[in-house]
Image 1 (cartoon, rainbow, N blue to C red):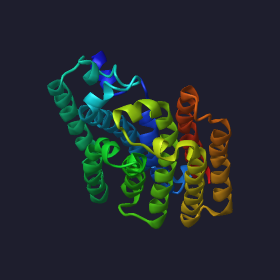
Image 2 (image 1 turned 180 degrees about the vertical axis):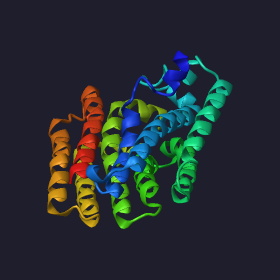
Image 3 (image 1 turned 90 degrees about the vertical axis):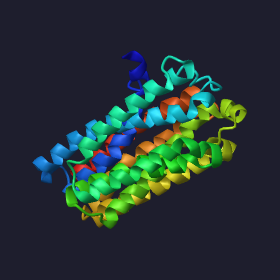
Image 4 (image 1 turned 30 degrees about the vertical axis):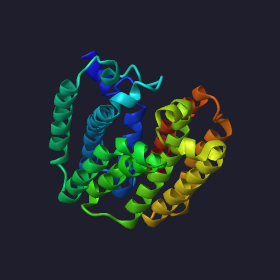
Length: 282
């Protein structure tokens, strides 16, 4: 089972958190905060948790099937099961089919709006690994894909999409643009050799300025999302307090140090949890 667990990145749960948290934001925001959450909302919290584990694993399998040859050329990824030959393509495809089946069963417990959104996300998941070959902005495509949970979490509660859900989605996209640019700084040299495009390579030495801009937009969208949902001034203040974590990231990040990029990237789980608390108690 170990190669399959490695293929699913279960040893690196940060990806699960970053996929899950926008979904939880959407659920809690649509429910009206922690003190208005009933059995339905808490059930959705559990289902989205399981779904995030399953779909993040499926996304990793798809990514590794696409990138098995490129992964051999990058130091950080050459030991992945498909790149190293620990698993073959057929085994990965069978595993992927099982993951998608479980994900579909979970999705079918939701309302029709959420089911449609879930189905629409599948082509994005499949196409994402190819983006690094054709565009310098694969981080933007990841943001569009990874934050679908914000829309799905909101619609799972309400059965529809409000403008605050769209603002939450936009905030998630900007957040992902920031943290994944930071993450991509680990591989800039290897990516250049392999011909892999990224915003880290595109922005170069200007990356801190760009990431700060993305984080500023994220904070702004989050504030407007809670205000539009009726949280009031205290909700906006709570969000801004959570967003102080983004300011800390920018003061601590050292772009030339791969270890620093990984540390700051992983710290975004804490930011996501702080936003969740701000939404829950606003």
